[in-house]
Length: 100
Image (cartoon, rainbow, N blue to C red; front, top):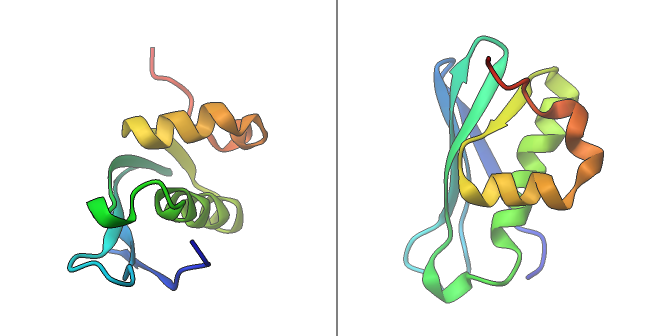
């Protein structure tokens, strides 16, 4: 899938990354909630007709780019975001420390 136009919202305590997906009735989204300087990525949705086309990864990459630019860390509570972090060890410094 070609690059999507991703928009983000930041309501201080929560937010999302969203993209319209051509040919889909519903857009894709990655939602997060805040805990201090960490964004907990808690849900990713891609319409069934667009799955497997890299849409979810583009949303995660937008979150990662903002983390680098804005200085927050990411806790991957969503299984897709967790898998993306495993595939990209170069993002390790952006991962929030695991609370003990």
